[in-house]
Image (tube, rainbow, N blue to C red):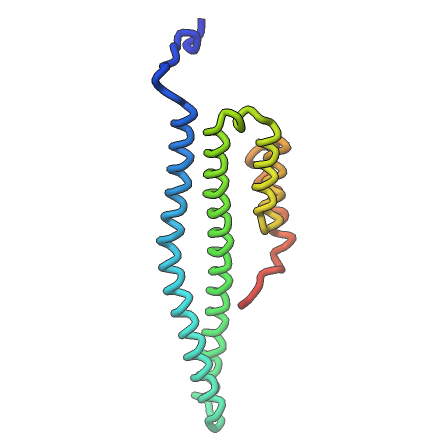
Length: 178
């Protein structure tokens, strides 16, 4: 006799409702951190925009001066700073992708909570298929779709991550500068 055979269900306890509560908690936690991080990123974005404008003004001023060694050094400094700012902007694109991904996670957790909460939907295969289709159609990045498909095909987490990474490597030259 196993330990599971000795367990008597508590009729006053609903594991589906407890699951829904924990799924909802997870979604709320991600939402809160996204909202808090947005404030910091907005401040950083504004700062970088101001820095770019200042560097542009300095560069234009230096170009208007007569040729000299200090001018050449200052222009080189402006160029180096511009490259660093562009690298920072690319890093912000990662944040944007992360935010999209986390928004998908919270949306999916909420959708799963609603599905599990409703007995008529919980045991309905077409409801699960519709929910999965809705999730996949919400993805904007091909790497997300590939990872989703891999998991639904029964591949391991490591295999799904490897497929996603391979897709991202192939698309790595598609990073946009704004």
